[in-house]
Image (cartoon, rainbow, N blue to C red; front, side, top):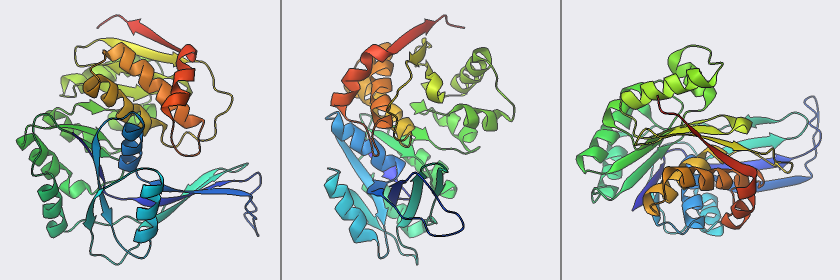
Length: 308
């Protein structure tokens, strides 16, 4: 079973508007309301691929019922719900796309010791066949303890967070990490200007414990070094109908794991299909459809790179 954890869920208020008046009134022509959180995104994609998963969510405040209703609307059913005791509401994130694109994110809660124990109870039946996805904004104070708990059950974990603490997590042998180029530069505190430099960083992350490493390069594709040290570069033709790149990375992570470890495809094919799903997400305001991803295959080329 796959489990996704969303520590900091959100209501994503997505606005598509041509003009933004920063000194006065802006009238909105087109908007959408989606359930947000990288773990939620991963569950949606796995549902789209008919891969079994259980989303674990933390809910609270006045906006909780709206969030739950949105999960149902987007076919994210029967989540494992942990109620938080705090004075916040599930955050509302504003994502504005137009001549001046920007995001405004609401505050996130901090888990209490009691709430962390509840999370461990929900994961108490983990075993070696299970994979836990830890993605997005989370309480770093409990992260190492959570990973130790997951590993004590023999389960695997995937982690996709933007934090220097990632380097301390590698010794626990994550099944997959997916830094982008900017995050890689932050981890190593240096500018990265070439494919060789990216590969050097990936090999170091691998030698430190990560089983699979994907570095996403935006419009330039991605580079994968897999569990067997095979190296692949995903390249794709430019998309002309991009709506939003929000969720593309989450799609890449969850679909790659689904194809490789749930459907038992090889790494090369898994990367191609996952890239197609990520491209499908870029053409939607929310997340990609498998039917759309199949139309992307001809746009993708997977290049095999010689091992180090």
